[in-house]
Image (cartoon, rainbow, N blue to C red):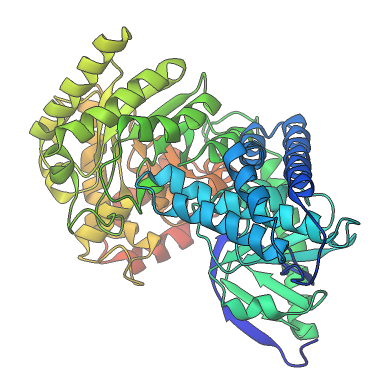
Length: 554
């Protein structure tokens, strides 16, 4: 046991905090003499495949279809004849376990080097399967069972099955050396409310099992042997958070109307099928923003139609029957893959018509069963809509389906200047408050000063008000604000006062946003908005909101 608290910083990819004894999932297996041959290796792979199938079936029975499908991928990998044969051949030497490990790693490395981003992501799944196989071979008696009581899972790299199979069995948090917010494990953790911190120093792997470990994903911190005071604070905060979430969730299913009976639309910003399911479970109408670029941030080329289909198929299937707005690739600002040069953006996408066609065809074909809309990001002039609409109409003809509405995400000053003309060539508009605020106030999106509440600045609010008025005058459907301002306690009343009646927010903010909207009065918010336009800055506006708006939160 460590005698002094040791702290590591990481990336909190699924919110929350927990304290419990550690348990390393991927503890290296002993390299000593183990008498195994090809038959035992084959049996181990088959047993792992069966285990993962059972986990997938259990999760599917709980209604978590998307998470079950993710786990089932591991079962398919464990049954891959090429992988199994490679491992069987490696087991014939004097050191079978290291040889099998090397065979699995070689197979994963091949996937790592492939140009297809989705296939590269499978490398982590292969390593997870290999780890399970090695544990079965090294511990045929089941000597590596997880603790029966509360524990924090620790690993160099976590797969979704590592989390799902221990849910309800004592797992309260997780820590990984490798991985990021878009990994399958992170998506699953967010969907089930499990605190997860990734990107932690490998030193954490050296902790003995049962070391007291504090996981604070909100702060992006991991602490070994925390002080009693730290443990007490974390446990109290966790209990309060669970109670708070329960009270917020109790209003799911209640009418989406404000305090003065004005209807509002509540949508979710998503990038995966798991997030769609969680959003719908939380009472969102559908998705007001599907981010399509996050799956391709490490790509070395424009995604093909097949790439887009692979990513979108499970997401749109999960959203069947619901309204869904899919945004085209938004490779700009802090989201630029290696094959593009900053500042990238919409002009670069439009300069590659084959890339537009590939994505549009996948969206139009797979979007038959949803209320589909296609949104163009970072628009700066009305003429940028023409090539996208042409691609959409061509795809609709090709697949024999009606052409879905095509709209613009207004998030640049140039777009606001052209808003009246823009409203004549689009079927709908949405507002991206994050980028619009950053441009108006001359801040980089990743600048620590670029806080959500800065959207309350009078200069930003005046532009939002102008866009709302233009959309209404053009007879367009009610616009949606898709940025973080749609869920912030300072900016939400101001948006309502500007005439916004629909917001699309992060999945984790759906319940809280509903709670606030149901307690806001639109006339009061309108007066607030009018007054705010006359003030000098975001700070003054925030003080005004605090004075005039009182929404008691759980």
